[in-house]
Image (cartoon, rainbow, N blue to C red; front, side):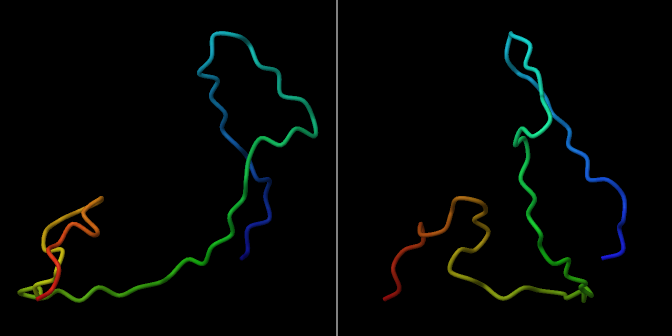
Length: 66
């Protein structure tokens, strides 16, 4: 990691009243995670899976294996 600058946070107040941020307040959470470098390979077809084309939220909705 070669970044040496300040870490900044964008805040949005969705309330109707003003909210004052003061030094020392805990307003953010930093999650340090690795950045994975990948190489993509184009394919003609994809193998079938139990989920099929089901997207987000479809986990566990497949019929049990027989």
